[in-house]
Length: 221
Image (cartoon, rainbow, N blue to C red; front, side):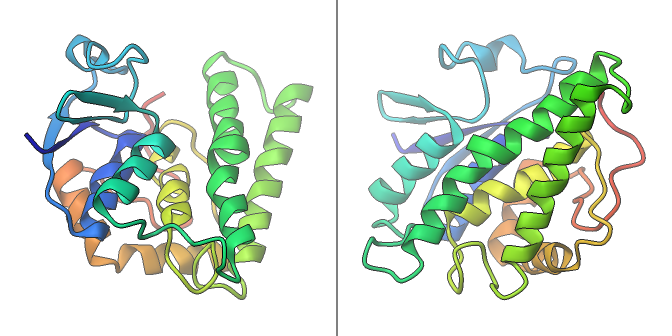
């Protein structure tokens, strides 16, 4: 019994099949539709967290994006897509790898929840949240001005983490990338990666990939 990736459509679990494709490892992909917005009962039953992503490897069931990615990279990928402490870009890699889940994605999620609750853009807390989102996008754009990938010259799991927040997550929390030219060029590089193309066709074949500046015309919230 090998590695099984449970993917909830239009969710951050898209990171895991993409990771497997980048590493060139075998995996079984099981797809789940939202019911109607959140994960269906059979997905929630996989792990006590009840969230995507979830993977299974023999008797092991594991959740959380970073945990799943680190497990797969080190067990099946000989540590590829992680930088060694001796690498000159190691500190930068660590920062951006943790920055996505620690800072950036929570801000985008907060904006989504406040907007869904009917909070206006004039509200002071929404103003603070939008300001932090803007600072995050500026930081990314600045980082990518002189670097091909977030960790520098090498593509790593830091890139695998951030792309969902810049693309698919905009179906839930729409925002524009207009004016962030370095970031947009980065997304075009992502879109040209064979592993990304293959994973997205397997995971969400009917979804329009949001690799450009504009948010989707129709959102899910």
